[in-house]
Length: 195
Picture (cartoon, rainbow, N blue to C red):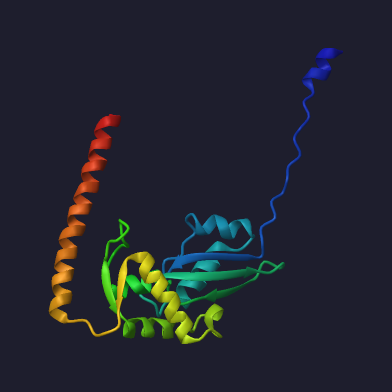
């Protein structure tokens, strides 16, 4: 009798995970696909992933391919959804305006330069977002200045001198190349240690 009792093992109760109705994610323009991470996120909420990808790629046709777009997807109980596509991310816009590929690597590093005119134009673009519609342009510009500090972009209140900017960009390119070479050397040394 004792062996029958030991043979019976209680099954653990399965807990069903209930996902929220709002899904916020960044999707690259014209590049939505059923591959992870987007496909599983949509599938867990019961959406038809292929139809979503077609609709998203069609709606983002006017954007340059690969631009990261913050997207809000509200899933309804009948498995339909509302799609809200915002303007490109702030960091992407700032990096494009400054002509840089990545932010700063060390604390006091300056990776690019922008003028207040550049920030004003980016603020006008960002003011079209639903979240920033009732925010004044001055406040949006202040938020952009803080983001510039985080990225290592220097904000100037006067026009940039073209020769000075060219010198800065060539010096910056040499510095980035040296950093990338150093990273590649570290990676190669690490690979040699593990093999």
